[in-house]
Length: 370
Image 1 (tube, rainbow, N blue to C red):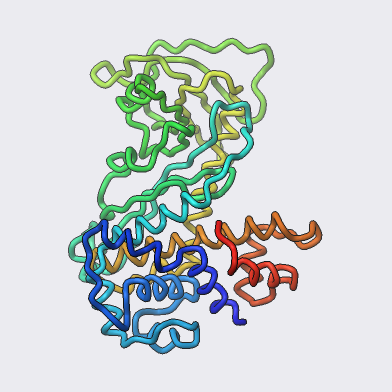
Image 2: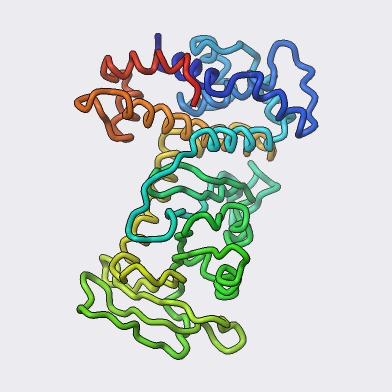
């Protein structure tokens, strides 16, 4: 069995057609098609992502070889415009819920780390007139929360490319985790809200280098700082009008180029060195963004309407979640000598050179459920 045909069958075993029907009803869409249904569109978009098809026309020529229902490119395009993208967003979060599992706590923190950030997909100005950017470009954003130690998606939402990240933060953050984020999320008034919320939101967020640190008080410690740590204090943040009501911990360190990195947090038990290590793990979400753009065809937007664009992007993210699910189940089942990293699994899958033990496992996966 060819790798991509196998992928399609695994997708259908994990999210069968009967699971989509209730979601279609919930969003109020009536699927009148007999030959190319909503489920066929879903399978097409997933296959286009994993095989990196160039567009609807290219997919029309290749979908038959992947075991998909053959349709004219104009039919596919029309369907992609009609089907509300919220369906694909719900399917992504459905698969995320299927993949949830408990993990060990690390670094002596009260909860797991959740990296929050956004990635922008840009095209020419005339391509997406409803999502203009500065200059001759247009584009959209995906706002993502990633469980760092697992590398698993947690929540995702969408916006046009000029929408501020902080506006969409409430849609992806979760008080069950410690959120780790860059400067785009470092608004001082949000820190007070996180601290005083009914369910406290722990955070570790980089703040701007010119942030005013009011009434700084050094934290007590028995040993000198290690590594690049320079300062560990508590203070109020900001000038008088925007100053935080509560005091927060601020850890200052240097990046590899010697530039200051100033981190604000409401975590008090971890050492300054552990705070620095926690923030470094935020890089995993950048790795995710790079991976999906290189491997899942994300920069090549097929359609021009919100339904077509976001439907394609949410399906691409679903493909990532499915690949991670297959990888994790595989590594938990194969012999120690056949275990792989996710990068190795992805490369060997792409080259159609997975070890025989993995091929047997993938075949058996068709009869499994997550």
